[in-house]
Image (cartoon, rainbow, N blue to C red; front, top):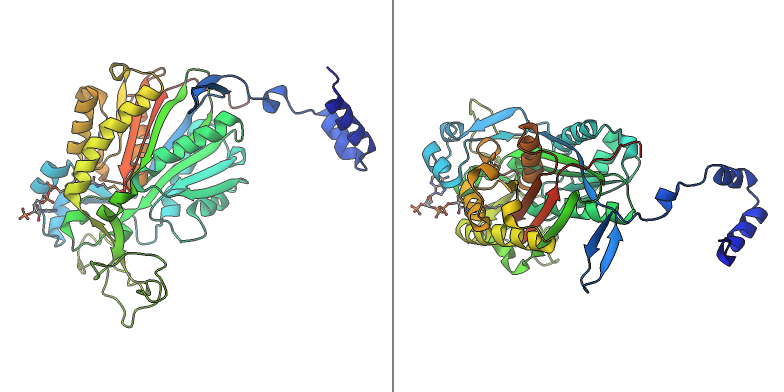
Length: 420
Ligand code: ACO
């Protein structure tokens, strides 16, 4: 119908001085599908009503880990007061990958992102938004997402997301929202970490747990009934002290990046050059960076027992909430792809969900805890190993510093042609 609104628009166009632009607009009108939200999926809103949105899911995956492998035995050989038996029995970790001295989080992210784009059959020109989840960015600013956007030659929005180990699942849900509303067609969600840069190799309680790596996913509209079906995001900042980055040599430091003026000048150069970040000098494997830094060295502090207690509860509970939100029974879950921090935590969560080990994906043995990268790496590796088939229901869960948690339920497949 030719409403008064259209008449107004028509008159504006008719009197517009730039006729070339207007003719082009009239000759190549925006396709109907781009003008309106197609009712591909219905979501429940907070007030109980329903909303028609596009279904959004993963159409490409890729991951990258640095070449350098550090086994538990290597750690012991290099002087860390630990042993393979302790690490394996308490965490399930056998080895982890460590970034080369010249490699940064942006390098890891770029490798994973290129693989995910290739997997989706896309070029960087298609990306509307890049989200990089990381707690080890190259710089405070610019964001690692902006560095990645430039390296890929993409022309799009980009930002970093900080939710520690929950970051990639948070990012997946944010990407889903952009695609669901039609605000973006293609979102690249990367989880990338150079955790070795914030490890204190003298602290055996944390040094053995983490590794470096990156995982990436392309999120686009998919067929109705596929993609992200439900999610659960949460935060309990009262537990922030249990897991944080502090300043080396100052156990009581707040770790504040910008402390109050009369506080410790975290950003100022110290009076003396700090000790090397590692006591592993002369180590044959050259497994850790020994480059001295003028900046105060930051390192992870963790109350392992309390974080363990939190993780065991939150993993199962958050996954159950996400399943409830989309009305999927836990018995119908084909594969549980949790954050890879500790195999004991994963086992406890799987038990809470009533899942047998054949429906749980574990690769913490090979990579350790890669923080925000872990779920994306696990999802990609599970898919590559043939553990995920079209139509499968997948549950991903992350947890970490904040304290934060994030779960997403996906039905795999339903890809549309990228030409659409
Ligand atoms: N090698 C050998 N012995 C060790 C090591 C080590 N690497 N680390 C600690 N120990 C010793 C301790 O000194 C202690 O010895 P003691 O009994 O003589 O005092 C003993 O082992 C037991 O230590 P606990 O800390 O009680 O060991 P626990 O069984 O709790 O396991 C662990 C520690 C693996 C860290 C566990 O608490 C855990 O997994 N917690 C959760 C970690 C996690 O998932 N973090 C998420 C991070 S996500 C993010 O956002 C960054």
